[in-house]
Length: 512
Image (cartoon, rainbow, N blue to C red; front, side):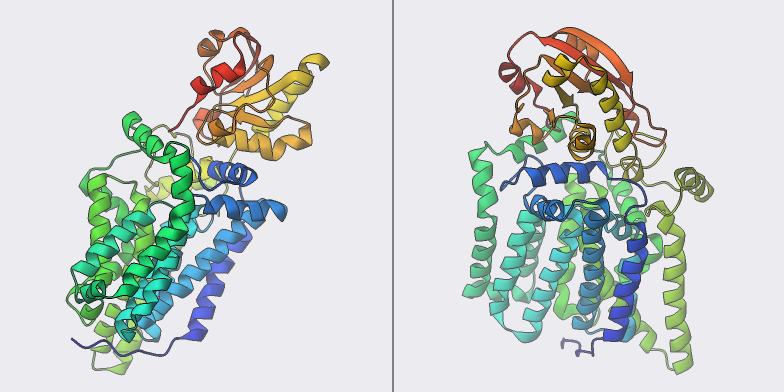
């Protein structure tokens, strides 16, 4: 089977779709508020290290740059919008490298834009926005190696993989899938050449700082993953439900596109690139068996959508009449755009909360949950963006009401990293001390200068606190109508810790 000939890159279309992607997100950068995890990432940026309990270090380093530039929500989200636009460009380039012409590239780019999971990921700051960029970049390198026969490009693959490992440990799954895909295809010839092994060495070298950090700290990420599994924190989907969620997060209208992409890679004109199809298939099967969260597979879909664009273009080009080809191309793009627009308000902060709820009810659709305990009037992606500034203001009211001598000794202890991050971001304008917490990596940063003499406590059971404090007083209550339900709780003031805080601190560790 010959390699499909290389078509010109549709640079004008690429630039136009990149501009469309930015135009979607830029007006919405500050539409709601900080997301819970964004507050945590900023705290990690204040404590730079080569590892954290539940994440690789790259996102913290990026967060630190944002903090140094002012740390605004708009700047934080701008990073994600730009990364999302770059993914559109990379996917279109991949479609071109797979043999696609102008229509294939346009369909691939539009598909990546309208996919609900991509709209959602590009609207929040997280490592998830960099992951598809890295995976798609790796796929581009593999395709280039097939086209050129130049094995030296495995060095670039290794560099991208190493950066990917410092971004998110799920890069290991991509690496496993790629290794198995190479073995299952004629690309296995590369195993007899030194460059693929040197590329693996580059990846390992870049990943080494995090490995050393994990070793020095007793491999906390493995402990955290075990705890998540033991506590049943995540929603585990049966195979049918998992597949259904894939169709939903990528968009049902795009199902024929990515299925056509797999057909193109395995049995169509793109069989010389079937290593890409095997990467997709192995990842899909692995995460299905391991019962991963539905969105864990999201970074692999640009590969299938790029191939799908080429497959659709080939099928349409087979029509004999030029007018029919033109009409069908326009119809396909129009259907994708229209149905993509219908789904967009479900994942983008386009509507006021009450209007969003009404829109979901009108469509009879709501995004599925990925974690068991997160409940609220809005889907978590939106609910976790409400109430943080108001929570800090409530804490500040209680703090200012303390007698002066108690206020000087008081500290704030939070039940989760979102609350801690909110206090650390907004608290300075109220004169609040930095928050401490036993949740995730905050537990490793310790109690700071807190003595335990007076502690304002968020989201910890009063009965548990009564065992370690002389007195526990309900001093206020936080409630936000659109926030997550677990954040609507009493705010407690505890006095007279019965033991040294340094002795109690290991018991406060809460990883999940």
